[in-house]
Image 1 (cartoon, rainbow, N blue to C red):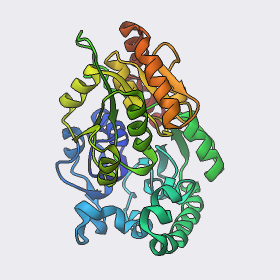
Image 2: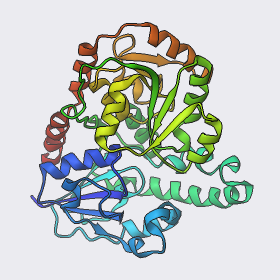
Image 3: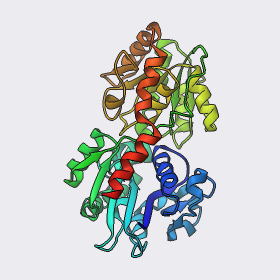
Length: 359
């Protein structure tokens, strides 16, 4: 069986790339296509496939500003040729699901989410307070056009596989399609407890982008009187550093070993935004540490209240501050938290996806 994988862009190792990594390991003879590839940014299993790229790869300053070329992505993704394959598996959060392929080639889409900024999160990315009134006015019709294209190309997929029931609902709402749910993989062999005692600080591991709502975590930790350490980087970092005022420590990007060490050391990991799935809570759980998350989106499917952490009904600093205080006063069973995370292993993901690809 000749298999092609398609990913929107390869510029780092986030949740979607970790799912792709497992697929590349399971199918080492597959070919990989992506709009933009920053060489060396992905894992060896992905890099070994030597990804085919689009014309966007050769545009000015693309390594840093690839998102600025978003209006060109529909044209670019449709240029790839899949005539020689039996199956295409797209791992999509933007436009990978919209590839054009012959009717004889089966297309399975592992959908991370329908395009957030084109549908229900325009203001978080392109609202006047984010980019200014003029730029927001320019982007609104652009994103409206992207949404129409996104919906219009939904039928190019034979079968949707969603990362959560929450995303399956979005697929139903925006694409009018049903989806099977396969939860993303968690590297439970790498993320393990080490027997150390937690330190009294809260942790964020996240891209610093609007919908992650890191601002809520900063304000909540200030109210709770608990230090906050933030792992990750992104366009919102300068704004968040000003908001933190020195009370939050920004550590930037860390190697995997550094992230694991922070999970192990932290008393609690925070997830203040509404996530499509949320891999971070399960990585923290695999290290035996509790999580506090907003009780919406994928977190409501992966966190067991009072067993692996706390779900917060209201997305406000006050509500999260109260949850931090309550969680720090509770005793959690490290073994029980760890056992829950093991249900989301890489092996489980690979086996479930293999069965679907073979259907």
